[in-house]
Length: 96
Image (tube, rainbow, N blue to C red; front, side, top):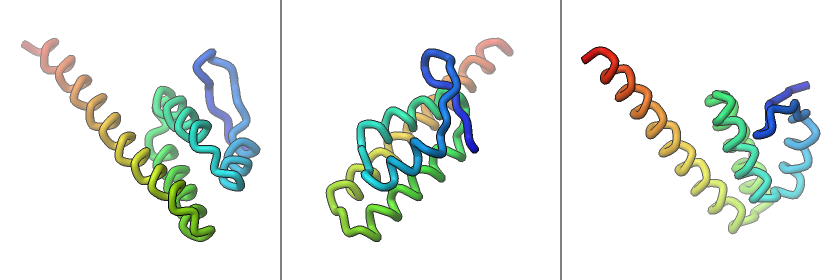
């Protein structure tokens, strides 16, 4: 069973939510879960979850959901790179 912290710092059971999301592909929920996981520094798990959702959308031939999930994956890559850049700038600023 997987756990994550939501934005209110309370534990959430991910397995049930993930399976429900995969079945219905509720995009706003998937997007929110990805952001919460990112805030908790669960980087690789975010992309694993999104890739599984993308595979489900492809398998079920849900074109709109597939497109939305691809866009979300791209957005999460931008968020990841932006956060890394900010951390590097903080480190660089503390060195100089």
